[in-house]
Image 1 (spheres, rainbow, N blue to C red):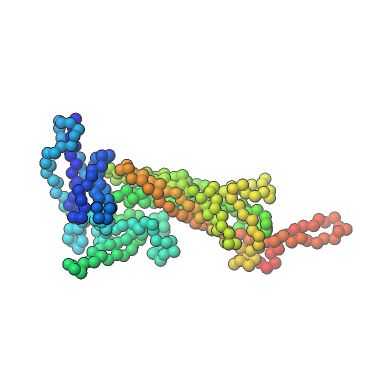
Image 2: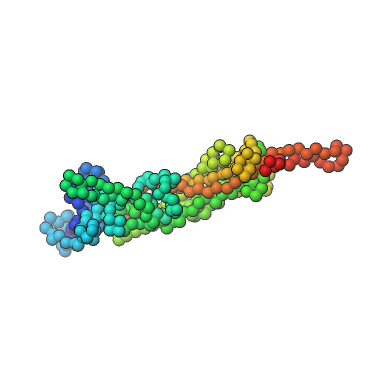
Length: 327
């Protein structure tokens, strides 16, 4: 049988605060290194050297260390590729850490950005000398993934999510946007199911020695109905069928008690927000969960039924029509 020796081939890229690390048994070519101060751990690639003969026990024979040329630099000077501040980016000239949770979606940093194609990172760099040394942090939006030399599982997770191309909910209502509903009459609400708008959808991302598997599924739809009411539906809702007549939706519906004539454009603004449950696991044994929401809207016009008076001696029947005089 073969003995195995594990050498950290990226040792030259790490700063002195890191303590000796515990090697992960599966797979053997990745090891984890943790700081007792920050309690943060990083996973780095190492090499396995087979030794002919012997047992399965770890060898104690001295091993010649492999010298590697630093690939991280700051102004041309060698820079630790990984520290407690994050992973170094030669392009941004700072240590990057993805912000988790991300900034609120109404933050100016998202302006003009596609939330599904990028994320916000804290960009940290040490400046000054001796007693004047200090950390400077700025926040950057990066499309895709940054150019960092050490790939952690979470980096691959977001790469897999980007490949899913998760989309906004496709909203359906009865009555529809071009129709007029009535006060106290049922309104049916639903979203159309597809792999990218409802799930389940799975994708994987990998680098040599590390793979992450990611699954996404909508767990609920939160409706903002425009009249001050909200509704949470844990199903996609049921599309309306004429055979249902004036019945309520079996799983996701609403009844308006006031007309929409006082609303902008005489219509209620509806918003459907899907809650995505995104789970992941890696071949290193790591796992986690990432929340995400997607929103889309529509409008509904709600009128009031008004009786129409007719001559009782005629053959005409009394009708009810929606009152839309103010709109």
